[in-house]
Amino acid sequence: MKVTIVGAGNVGTTCADVLAYREIVNEVVLLDVKQGYAEGKALDIWQKASVYPYDTKVVGVTNDYSKTANSDVVVITSGFPRKPGMSRDDLISTNTNIVKVVTEKVVKYSPEAIIIVVTNPLDVMTYQALLSSGLPRTKVIGMAGTLFTARYRAFLAEALDISPKEISAVLMGGHGDTMVPLPRYTTISGIPVTELIDRETLEHIVERTKFSGGEMVKLMGTSAWYAPGAAAAQMVEAIVKDQHRVFPVSVCLEGEYGIENCCFGVPVILGKNGVEQIIELELNDEEKALLEDSYTHVLELMQVLEKMS
Ligand SMILES: NC(=O)c1ccc[n+]([C@@H]2O[C@H](COP(=O)([O-])OP(=O)(O)OC[C@H]3O[C@@H](n4cnc5c(N)ncnc54)[C@H](O)[C@@H]3O)[C@@H](O)[C@H]2O)c1
Ligand SMILES: O=C(O)C[C@H](O)C(=O)O
Image (cartoon, rainbow, N blue to C red; front, side, top):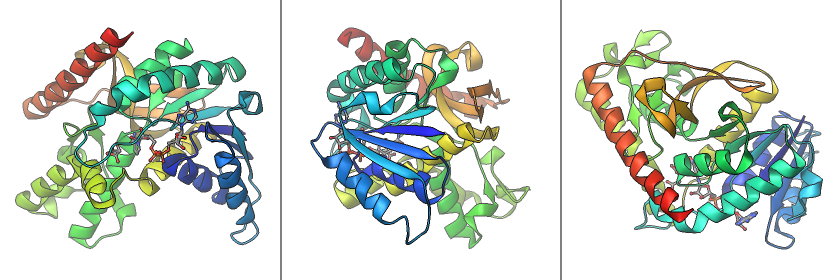
């Protein structure tokens, strides 16, 4: 199994590192536009191989897409991250063309690959990659929900003093501050979360989760990478091992949840074909209203994308 990661920055390199030390695939190609940058990062990861140990081959290249040929999965992280004071949406003008050009080159050499988009603003960048690739919607997906689920689980684990592994949760919606964590679908080893935590603490955790990306930007001056890189690697693993795991991912909806022709975060089953199935949850009125609000936000950005093309 071969995976290409475009963008050897913070998120791309972390994803490559996780794929290597957990031996999820045989070969990782790390590609960047900056001369020598991906080569250096790949060499650094490879020089760690005897320490951990692992034997996944990690190769770095400067803009040479021929080295990415026949990849099974391609993760696109190329593009600018936000700085304090910016929203993810502010990145649309700089990142759209990067995602467009990168996707076209990726597909030329790996026409069968499944593409995972990480670049922000996530839902519209996933849509741009879908358009530029000409691939079916099941093969072009965005990473956001796996990250937000991980953050939500981390906050819950801390509050409950319980292992994060015991917490199972689902979130939905666009990748932004309007994302919708769903406490009704959150359990601690099968026990509804509401049995173990008071309403006020849970509401605080839900709010913190929604703004958790911005919290990291404020702390570090740029966006997060350890959890995002690992979350992308988790999606790669589900695909290359045909695990049929359930994750929220951004996928182009065609009528599901009443949404047409827009990439939006929903729970899916991930396997070797990419999205094996979209799961349509029964939502109550309050959840539907929150989701509608999130959809309105993504739709506004879709209109900006349309005007740019
Ligand atoms: N979806 C999510 O949950 C999530 C999480 C974290 C970050 N992000 C997004 O991921 C993107 C990358 O974040 P980062 O922290 O790794 O940024 P970074 O600046 O560390 O890395 C980005 C890399 O992309 C490279 N690049 C730029 N244009 C390129 C091109 N045309 N071809 C190949 N490489 C190119 C840059 O040289 C750089 O090395 C940002 O847009 C960020 O907002 C998304
Ligand atoms: O917040 C960002 O800008 C990056 C990413 O979307 C995140 O949630 O960490």
